[in-house]
Image (cartoon, rainbow, N blue to C red):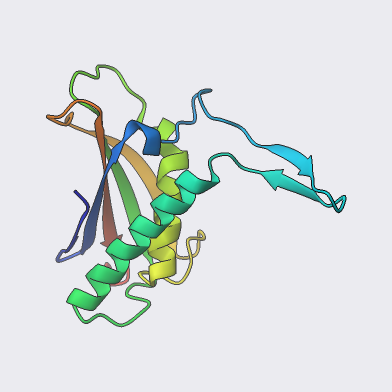
Length: 155
């Protein structure tokens, strides 16, 4: 279940994913390739594109929901830090949360497009910093919990 909550210092946004939605960066990714269409134009085919677009859209919906329910103006924050907490499926032992960077990047992009911050460049965003949360109680389910901290009001 996807959730978004405004906190005293920023927000928490969680997306619950299944294995087909996860994009790992540890050698198991389906890398793209260059193709030439019938007009001779060269294009890059990204087989992960549909999954990235789906993640981006889900995050955009969560961002827009947070903005609309709380009557926020955009961009909500100018400078933020993001911690990405990964909760693995039940039974997973050792894990490297940073290997889900290709899953988390489209989520960050969707929240940027929703208007939570102006851009996901280094001038506006620090992170994401990858952490591990306790495993899910369900097998085959991951949860990505983004803890967004507003840096504008910190001394």
